[in-house]
Image (cartoon, rainbow, N blue to C red):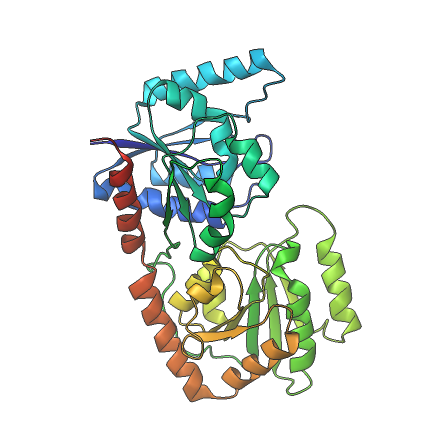
Length: 374
């Protein structure tokens, strides 16, 4: 049975209490849980401890904690030590293939992998700058392939990447949702209509538009509640900024900050509607999680989100920054129970047919087979 070594860049060393499990980590855990059933042994290397390693232990997945760093040619002795350490790890694990769950991870291990003739794949989940692409790839062995989590990501990133890796191949594999955790539920039994956003407070998530949308919606009806699930993971003061905006717009009593939550499936089933106003969301994992719970989603018409939402059937697409447009669509859906019920069924069906874990793992293992030498 071949072994695939999966390398994740989180948690970072010394940040166990801050190392929350993000979308990329959740996607990797879903893949890890299914690969043995598809004929692949797995091993994982991460740089530190946190929620991700807690899940690896719970799932019984073998792993090493190695606080790896990118190679720095200005520190040749340190770089040599890193290469030798990776060689020792790879000789012990003996993978047939390496799957890096992040664009710039290969700068640490690619020389060691190439010296042992082990092919590797880079999963591109977030955009990199031209400078970052050049820094990662120039002068180093190249991946056999890049996997992008949306066509939008590939269209944006591949022309820049291909200039440095002309012999690499490019694939698109959408993320998947665990249908055992995220399953449909009927209209929530509540005297308030709950609209939610689930995201960390990164600026591109555009929480301000969500709060401005709330300000417009309460002009039409008062039986509304707006849940903000997520936290300021970088400690930039974003939470205070958003709370101040809610106060200025007169909706602070209706906008509820729930912080980081681990019970996302239950949260989604308590919502009537999910809103994703991001500017260039690479994929939008929470969109398929909400759809799997039967929740209509109103998302921005940007990035990977239009590849998920069937406009008018499973949700609506609105221009980035159009808070009034988000408000109109939300009020239309919430004001028509029959339409909501139709979207509930259509969203759940789309999640099962297009974004199941089984279909995702089949796609990933097909890429593995295409990359491995005969």
